[in-house]
Amino acid sequence: MSDFTSNFWSVFVTALTLVGIIGCAVLLWMAGRKKVVSTADNTTGHVWDEDLVEMNNPLPRWWVWMFVLTIIFGLGYLAAYPGLGSSAGKLGWTQKGEYEAEVAKANKELEPLYARFASMTPEAIAVDTQAKAIGERLFMNNCAQCHGSDARGSKGFPNLADGDWLYGGTHDKILETLQKGRIGNMPPMAAAVGSPEDVRNLSHYVLSLSGSPHDSLRASLGKSKFGACAACHGMDGKGNQALGAPNLTDDIWLHGWGEAAITAMINNGKVNQMPAQADKLTEAQIKVLASYVWGLSNNKAQ
Ligand code: HEC
Ligand code: HEC
Image 1 (cartoon, rainbow, N blue to C red):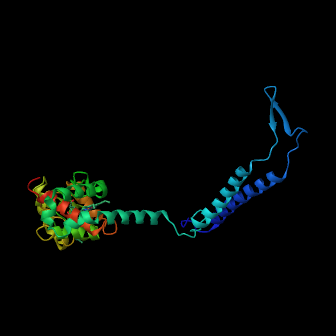
Image 2: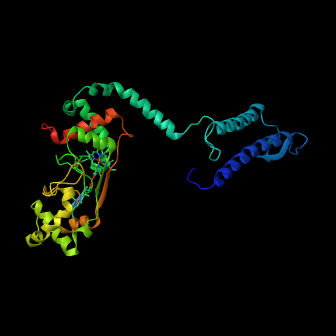
Image 3: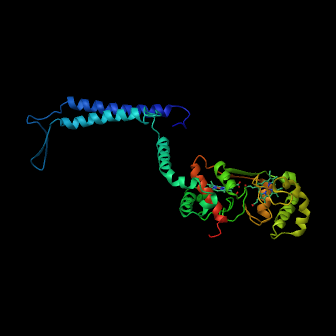
């Protein structure tokens, strides 16, 4: 309920709940006191099927007590757990807290399993059958939605199995990527490049760097404009892993290739984020995952 700007709904729900419970209690009390008009033989006077009559007896005691206990239980429950409007309840129970406690318990149980990998080198983990199975499962649950179940990525989401890296493909760099996340930031560059025609020419120059189909006249005209890009992509266009600036000479394209895609990149720039995993996965899980990902392009046996 923290999304609401006033506590109106909290008060409303609390009042409605309490009025409901008190209403039940009053109804029960009144029903116990008030006797329905009945005939002299203690029936209600209703007759069905010729001789079936309805007696006018009070509710059995135990039945009444069940109502009373239900009301007491309801009040106790509402005092202990969240339920009355935005009240948190005396026990301080939350769904989130219960989930986190369960995750912590499961992680504790798994500790002995991961302990075996603690002293192993990344290379050894990458070829260990059990670690690979764990790595694959972790990948399916936490990474596949973006990088694809075969880790080969898609537009905007890098291929993790091709040996081409934005931020570096050593085990340590991959580990750093997973722990802290990454934000790739290419600013809009059109103003620094010049006219739309200059941007087009520069796009053809960029295409020429990887030997992709291009207009060589435009490419030669665009070459001098590449200075604006060199700070990040390097004078030779081979990129800079410290910035996550991709190699533009290798014909591997994260955001598509061709004049239109590259012109759009220069005009609009791009901010692309890999979410940090340190608060989602344990250190041991990240270590196994980093080895698994490293192995995708380094395990020759695969
Ligand atoms: C919400 C989508 C998303 C999820 C989930 C995700 N990633 Fe990423 N990941 C990205 C994006 C986007 C990039 C590229 C960042 C950039 O362009 O700067 C990236 C980059 C990377 C890189 C760097 C690649 C390089 O070339 O340097 C690695 C390694 C990586 N992810 C591994 C993983 C692993 C392992 C997981 C699972 C724990 C994971 N990612 C989960 C979106 C995601
Ligand atoms: C401030 C640093 C910076 C500058 C300057 C810069 N870029 Fe980038 N560029 C990046 C980064 C970082 C990415 C990767 C974005 C991402 O993570 O998705 C990128 C991505 C690209 C891509 C997409 C590559 C692919 O694989 O799809 C192209 C093309 C590109 N830049 C061209 C240029 C050109 C041309 C210039 C000069 C006009 C330029 N960049 C200037 C940082 C820069």
